[in-house]
Image (cartoon, rainbow, N blue to C red; front, side, top):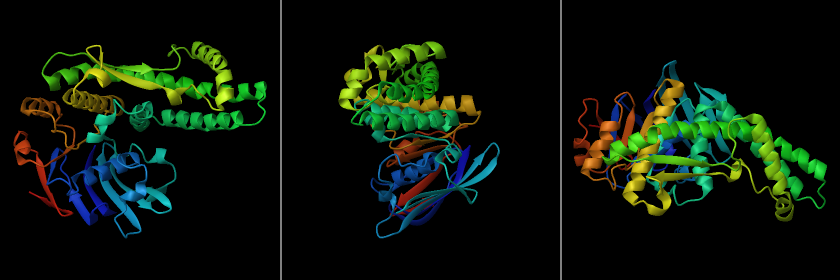
Length: 365
């Protein structure tokens, strides 16, 4: 899979611009603040229908304009797709090959992109919600069933929370609302557990290769139940757990346990990354995570995603930069932003496409 071209219109600082990519290594070079990250944001939007930078996507729209649009031509093993995302004041419009798409799930995955962003460095110290969002987003690209179960769970959770806010709560009715949560959670926990196990099969290798030293890196999935394989045992444990928390739910008038409260913890050589690792180590952990996700996508889809690396060389010395570049597979379309031509010179590949960016304009050179 690779992106042949994108067109951005009224997107951030771009008025109307088209950029062509090669199916290989692409370098976006230019000074800070010129709009390199905006282009990666546009590609990520085509992949996930969301910005990785803002909850309020209307901020994407260029000042004094009514809408922002991104069009991408994507080549995959089945052929070529034209993807369009339009952000306007009423919301968002998606289309595939000029046919409107009503559900995000029908659009997500048409372009599989894995993004490294400096914002990822907040992952370890931010809330569990941010870590869940990352895992949910990556899993959503791979499994429609996962997104279906997650959507159903959130719908049933909303219903249960609304009922808990009623002046009088009937035990039988509350139990009915509670049981609706079980089946989608069982499937979600099993998929989350499988995904984390798959990540752990790659993480240590990639971290060790980037760092230049043998290390053990793993993610621990902090589920609210212990059983993660047998459906009946999971349901039995859930029922017992919800019963034990029932009084607290009634007092606080909300559901205090479930997959919406779970977390993931990162450990490097058995030390909690959040507490004990330097910024440089954290950056290498994130990079190992992203490269592991690339491999899992290939393992499942039999097709590589595109890899977006924003300001990836910061806080990596020359040796670690070279180690990272060696790890980037030739068969993965990679798009890197940088400000320094010296970093481009580290890339010893024949397929490098250098794109110079300045004042909202792009030139291949």
